[in-house]
Image (tube, rainbow, N blue to C red; front, side):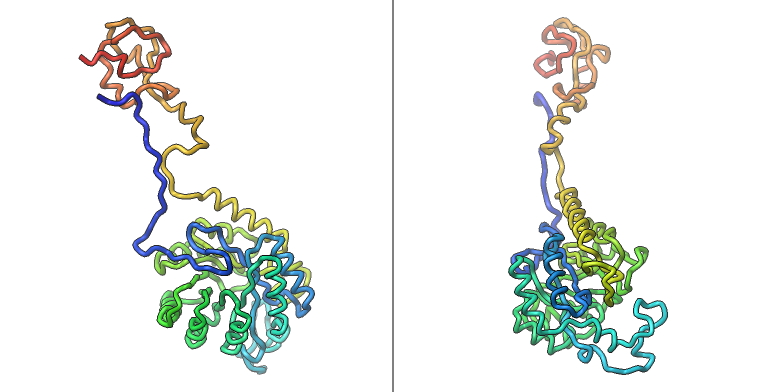
Amino acid sequence: MPTHRSTSDSHEMMIVSDNPIKSIEIGKRSIGPGHPVYVVAELSANHRQDFNEAVSLIHAAKESGADAVKVQTYTPGTLTIDCDLPLFRHGKGSLWQDRTLFDLYQEAYMPWDWQPKLQKQASDLGIDFFSTAYDMSSVDFLEKMDVPAFKVSSFELVDIPLIKRIARTGKPMILSTGMATLAEIEEAVETTKNVGANDICLLKCVSAYPSPLEAMNLNTIAHMVGHFSLPCGLSDHSMGYLSSVAAVPLGACMIEKHFTISRKNDSADSAFSMEPSEFKSMVEQIRLVEKSLGKVHYGVIDAEAESFTFRRSLFVVKDILKGELLTSDNVRSIRPGHGLHPKYIDDVIGRRAAKTIRKGTPLTWEMVDIL
């Protein structure tokens, strides 16, 4: 005999692929599926070679909800040579049109002797501090600082010797993938793993400054997660925070945004950087999206408990005497949900009432003569 009331059990699960994604650890934070999105404020050139402004940026980043601040460790001479030939100048349409690479990097680089001091500032605030390494000397320098992770920029993703050197540190590696083909990303990841370093996070990136929204191709994030079975995220050079927030439901575990005190503070990167109030709003929106995404769940949740009672079920809608036939005229599927499941309507119609039943009574099997 069917039970008095048919209900569905609640099922909670997480989608597990054949190759589960292993989280990485930076500082005290786990980064990967099931963990809060790790939000990085990229200081880049926005310190304007003023140490006090760099300190202010770190404090503002912390107040704006960043989990980490990231800097860049290079000198003009470790990135390029001082050369005025056309090949060494930014082209038409660039934010830095006609400027030589060397002059631009001379203006933008952060003095190395600041970085341990800034690391201490960040540590005192409880925020992670790490950097992008651009050559072997910067790797050695950052290793002495004992940074918790290394970033590889999109432009250096094809520098396999550099990737090998960073991988040998054993520290987590964040690889930005702007301009890279799938094969180039595979080569970088394989190189890292062959050295024995497996803590890798890939960042979808568009190496255009700023990046137009139509060029973002955020669906690539979900593909990267499935293809590499690694934590993935977004290094976002677009204006505003729409792309960063939209990346979260696609699987982004890390978001990186350029950060400035004010876009009026002219620097090499200020034009496409995010101000503190905007960054704070972005973090708030990301946290709300995380709450909304939740986890895979079927069945009733606490918030639906009240509504659940108003599902349809079988009710007596007219007074029925004992022995009287149950018909579609006196038994119907209506709200609320305290009677038999609606699927039993054909099982009860045509049977007789086992007792007198008043209108408005939820139908149960005890009220139905089954003989």
